[in-house]
Length: 265
Image: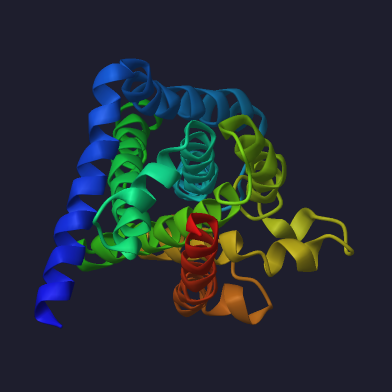
């Protein structure tokens, strides 16, 4: 049992290292991770922020946690695209022929994807502090908890994307299968504006959107302006964020693993 676990961990680290090595051949991907936060901060913080007034608080303090969540939510698209490209090039079939633990392929990829998107999140935080004047006003423990929630949510979304990527035959198909619905969902939440101004038929969708709970939770932990809703996820956003993230992992980790095994066969 111990030996099996040991080899699974080592194989997972090897797969993660393979993911990192791709960056040497694709330096533009690293640049995108660093430039994207600046673009998002300027676009939403200054272009949109100049036209939005938030009663009782600074809009940029309200905005930045929402953008942090969006960065982690879009890990699903990146994971799906990477897996789709591996499917297209036959990499998944090559892994099948290697004497490695089957679970290591997906675990190694997910860990590598999470670490790279945490780098992007760090760039976003830096851009928020330097360009938008964003600050975390909570305690050190609360700030660490907020970033931990973002990492947990991002890890869960990676497995959603991995599952989708295993069904397609190319990276382009994977991108279309995720970005087309995921990006609008990041707007159909309290990401950029409070949900209280939404139409009555649309507000419940936004209030129960898992992304709304994550944004409300990190805003509360950072000590930034937040919206207290009248539904359970927004009254208890930290608990709701953990429940949503764990639920996604409980559902999509087994589904992705089973799909990978079926694909290997």
